[in-house]
Each structure stands twice: as C-alpha cells, then as structure tokens.
Length: 219
Image (cartoon, rainbow, N blue to C red):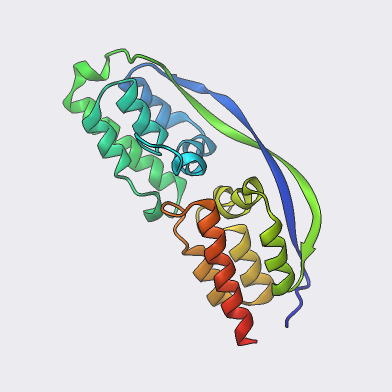
C-alpha cells in the first residue's frame, strides 16, 4: 500500500455568512447584483445551498430562482434560472454569465416587470469559513477511509463541495489528494463524478466509501 509524502489533513469547519454590498429589490437590481457580486456570492447562492436542498419540500435549491419565485412572483423566470444545471459548469464565471443572460433577457422583454418592487429584498451573501485541524491525518488509502468515516457533515461538505470554489470547480479536496499524493487517478475521477446535486451528503459519502473499498480490494 502506497504511503503519501504529503498527508491529507482533515478539518473541522464553521460557516459564518456575511452579507455583501449588493442588495436587490427588483429584477433590474438583481441583474446588477449578478454582475458585480463576488464569485464567493455566486457560489454561496448556488452550490452552498446544496447542503439544505434535500430537506426542502418545495421551491428551488438555487437561491436566485427561489427569490424570483417567492418574492418577485415571476415563476417563468424562476424556472429558467432553476434549469441551469451547476454540474455543467467548469467555472464560476461561466455560471455567472448564464445567470446574467437569463435575467437580462427577461428584463429586456418585460421592462415594466423588471422595475417592479419585490415583496422582500434579496441580499447577496457569501460564506466565511473558520477552519480548525481535527488532529488526524491520512498517508495511506486505509487511513484516508478511516478519516472519511469520522467526518461530520460540515467537514465532509467543506472538503467535498465548498472546496470546489477554491479549486475553480475542477475537482475537490479528496480527489486532488488521491490523485497527486497517491497516484490513484481513476479513483479520484470516480469520486469527483459523484453527483453533488442528486446525492445527500450521507449518500455521497457512502458511494465514496464503496469506491475506496473497491480500490483497496485491487491491492
């Protein structure tokens, strides 16, 4: 069993939500906010909400679509925003561009509705992560599996989903380490392809553990 020179460090994480400078009370202001808000804000309102998506009984997991539906009462625009599949994007810039395009097209076609005041304002937010080392690391695949089992939902979410913002949507902390430190490219790619949109955190972890067990049986 290969031993990595660089260990995988597991972290505990707490999220502090910070309200940004952009606020929208109309669709026109939402469009302006989409243009000027930070990448972290776009990520927060699309990817970060995946953590609660599976507990929703109605509405959309995309915050922008949900606000357009619930506060601006524009169901057709909400559906157009919700249909944008975050799994198709390789950059926040690409996702931002399509969000802006959908809203801009609607505002151009419905200028009076674009200026109509919504029931509630939309506050562009982003997450600030507070990290604390958990005190255990992994240098082998077996140690990595053991650490993965011990992670809280918040820690698993940090390493598997929110790390994608730092890594420009290309990969996640787990896959990056497996590839660069253990040379397990096939396993890393299989883990990265686990669908973060349709899986819960628990089912994603379970699939990951099964993939690791399959790899260990090859040794």
